[in-house]
Image 1 (cartoon, rainbow, N blue to C red):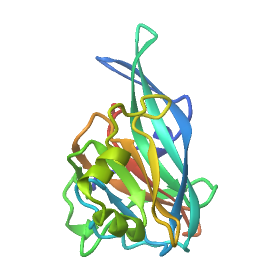
Image 2: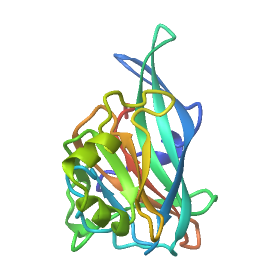
Image 3: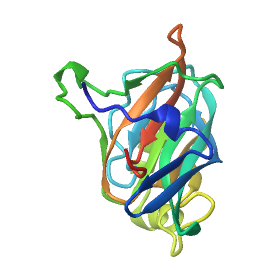
Length: 212
């Protein structure tokens, strides 16, 4: 079976994970709203690949809440670090009864091998879930403006590492909300939660921080 994280456990405030390096306790924090003028959702590193294809599953256009699931790293019960373990775009405040991989373009889940997954590449250490309208506007920004907004001299570190939000398209309000991606650069998958009757509850990118 393709890789699927245990999102039911990861998306639980207070969940505790342990490995040889220490313990990880999950906190949940609001991360503002994400405006989707088209209802399409793109998962990407916006500084590297703003022209990424949207996922094949769309939602009604609108404004949706975002959540950052932060793993507080403990050693001898003292906080030594905090990392964003997952980033969630909340479509409906209902529990998910099942999860499916978010795919884009012609990606075919049936072609994935055991423990494989589709994900987006990160080279700038940040990730987002955003509307293509916002990302298209970002492509028109010059380097100085991008650095001023998304690469400040000091990134926010607490409670949500790297949390930055900016409106990219004034006409529609389309915006980009970024967080740091777990331990940094890599390839990170997104999953879509659905209710028992098939309605979308959320999109969640797993940054593969917690063990297991």
